Image 1: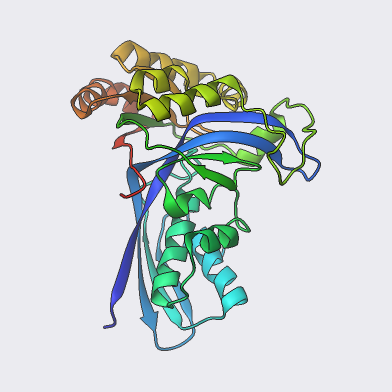
Image 2: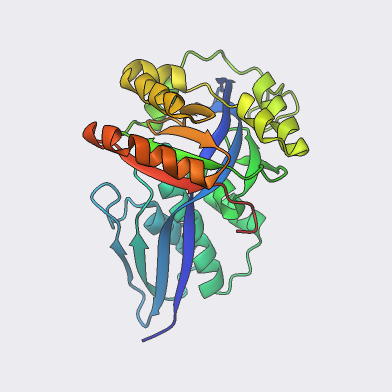
Length: 303
């Protein structure tokens, strides 16, 4: 049996998500502070003697077929760099699907790193980010993770100081939402700047404030600046999410908001003990509503 390589694929949350306008190319101009957390999928890969690609695992919502971003990443590299060998790929899913946590995107980034290692392609992180941007706007961030500012359509990245350590409770409702549909429903003005340049970008107040908080390593200032423009759409479609936020706030989290396009609701605390105590206190209530409850911690770029 040949050697198996393994990579963890961490979930992504947004600390801010500012939609600055609709672009003429159909995308939205955004400014987001993004953060990886230690809720992870796992990818393992083994070289085959033939040139066939098999994806094993996944689940009903992330089936092991050609629609999966893991498979599409292999196809992308095979088309641009050539198929160096067949592969058996094993995907173990823990990140919920259609949850605003970028599970599929993180799987794609992990697959790219595995291929780079297995096939000795010697791609730099920037090379991998450029390739992965062809598959999705939020995938490049997950090549390096940690804390970063994303602009443009989300693919232009600027590393930021590591966030002060924190813990997050994740409440995943028993339904998903479509990110493209959420953006389509958002009432955003026409973006007047250049689509592929952020020279005219005026960051909104909460993103500027949260960057300053990161520079000061201030948890309190970071919490005060959290924000997500997409909440107004998803919470209107699913009013129960407002109740979920309030339950977390009443239970003692420092702040609660939606992750990405949703529907996952996040509750932020500074210490693990408090996070797990709140999770224990609300678990039964949320499980009766059909929700999944997770506890995760922030990751820095080196993890």
